[in-house]
Image 1 (cartoon, helix red, strand yellow):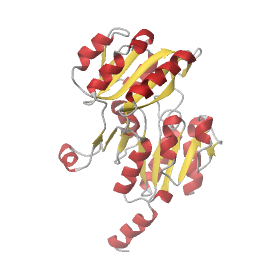
Image 2 (image 1 turned 90 degrees about the vertical axis):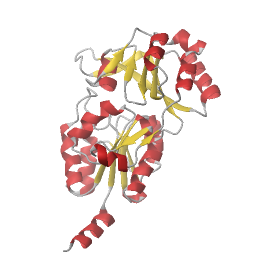
Image 3 (image 1 turned 60 degrees about the horizontal axis):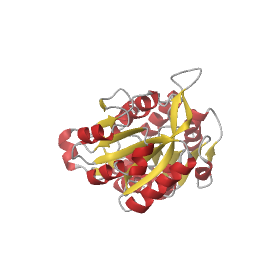
Image 4 (image 1 turned 45 degrees about the vertical axis):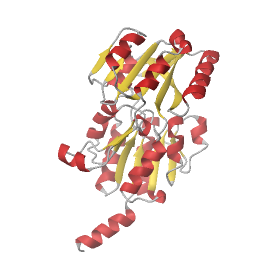
Length: 312
């Protein structure tokens, strides 16, 4: 069989497998790549399929997982606000597309100066457009989910002026705000962000995590806190995956995605099979076209599904 025929077969059969990280292919410590998922995803790649990570995490936190899987594909981080291919050398990177959708520095500073936010803010984290993380907290949640042993700048707790000083005039890929989990206050903050900044940003609410009672490295939900994650209005996992799919010439029917949270809703609309993890939010489970990974251990659901789908 000649090379041209082989390439044609690959082009006709190649699938794009898109995976989220937290609650999807990582273990319960939100740091370790589940070994069964790792083995299966590497097999999928060797079979000639494309494997792509699409996460709300920052780039430096997602990069070790990308490297552990030995990927050479595009990496989607910040919910689609930053797309690049880390496997390329610097010369190649200049020739390849990279997408970056930051939040304007003026918008970030304006949000932080809002009276309602300043009065209720517990912690704040920003990731600058040059991939530097600045945070007022370094508790285990931020350490495991955002820093992942990478360089970051620690400032005083909820000190907005110090954050602004470190930020300077740089735009941001992500703004993370932590508040008390009080519904009335959170709803007022939502209303404020929607009314004043809806053309500039997109945001969603996420659980604040804390160390578990029995195993400190295992994170559990902190019922007293809540996190609001803010990105550029153009940041969208669905749009990002569509871009990567078109780049690789993979049609919708050959795209398979795995997710578990509200930020995966748009992603599910851009794939032929959207699969929700067994621990997903109910709203996501109702929107999937590929079912729910209701078999095997929670963190091994991706591997089990792919083993059956690709008969490996």
